[in-house]
Length: 296
Image (cartoon, rainbow, N blue to C red; front, side):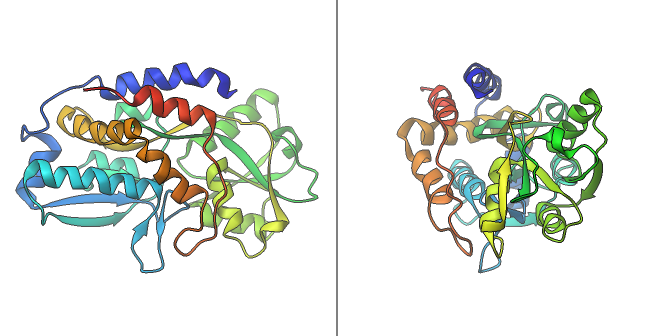
């Protein structure tokens, strides 16, 4: 499936930075930040290893680190080294509305970039590529979505995973029981306690949930990819200055190769409060970084 994604990623990179503008112009998000004296970061609380609450009670993770690099650039651009950073937890249901209505200025989590959502918000460059898979208990006999016929699956509300599973089930005529949850820990708990036969979400998030569980040896990720989910940091629509600032930071990290080190830090080594996820960078993501490392 991912053999075709390099072209798609290149296209996403083009559209992600096609809106240009002078980051020094004070309008939109940058003007709001300057006037209020603070930038508001919306973050997930349990999307390991992208954005989750660390041992000290503060959000940490791969996407959070990238967002902090962007915030550092905002401070430099606005000449506000002591800019206050306000942290606001978001969920899969609240992340887009809170960004669109101005409550948060940047969303740092595990959000799939798609055209439907782009009608409400904008995305920066692709920072991760994943897809929907199934987490099951070993020995369940479930290997593909077709094996869920007559069984129950946990789905997080408002996610692309929910849409993917329901769409495929409808096309194939599968009778699957849907157990809707508010977040990933709740969905995985439903699997642990046998309220569902599988929990479906992005394979990277499933890896984090399993490695963080009490007994990872009891669970496995199975099946083919059921969706294509390129992740991106969200900012508000029609704000070319903020988009350019964010994409410049990300392009610099990709061009220098520093983003590879950041990735390894969060996906291949022990992370704060959690064991190592052990998810080496895919060849598709490497290509994505290469094609998005735009020159000056």
